[in-house]
Length: 245
Image 1 (cartoon, rainbow, N blue to C red):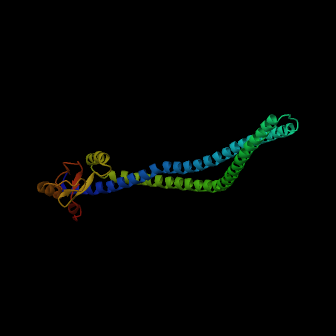
Image 2: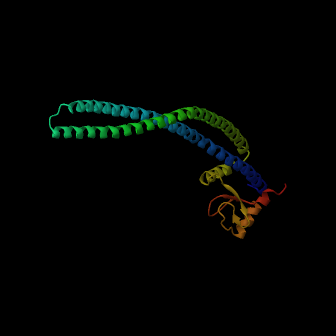
Image 3: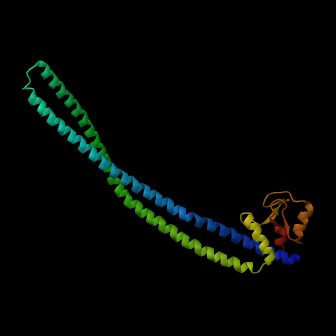
């Protein structure tokens, strides 16, 4: 391959590489879309779960409250019975024993009533939370639907752009030496899309390795394809490619 032909091929390869890097960016953006939608969906589902947990908590607290109220009523009935028995006892010992039982039941009921008040406060708090979450959930659903629609539209646009760039690459690739293209593609796949680099000063533009003067001269002359000894990328000289002719 002569100098002029090699320069022409390098110019085309450079265009191909620019497209490949664009394709890489587009694909990376496309790859993020499912996880972005999944993240928004997870946030919505977590909020729905929190709402459901509050509702279940209210049910549990309500059952517990009713159980406590039944216990209070049962104790009240026992108190009535014991109070009636006070008039029937015949000894001071029996009287004192009944008074002790009555005071113990009153103490228990007082403690249970405190628990009931606490449970009712918790129920009230949870009901307010459910009301607020239910209201917010509608907004969150609307926001999720909007975000999902935006991501789907973004996905559609990116796919269109991807197809367009792929066609553009195919058209340009048909104009380059196919053996050189295959070499470029192998290196590109191994080097994260960067197969063709210019020399920067006296170093490789890909890995910064110092290039010997003789090799630099050969690169500038565009007499043959030269790759970096360290990173394996194809090297070219920017000045040589920009020379009119």
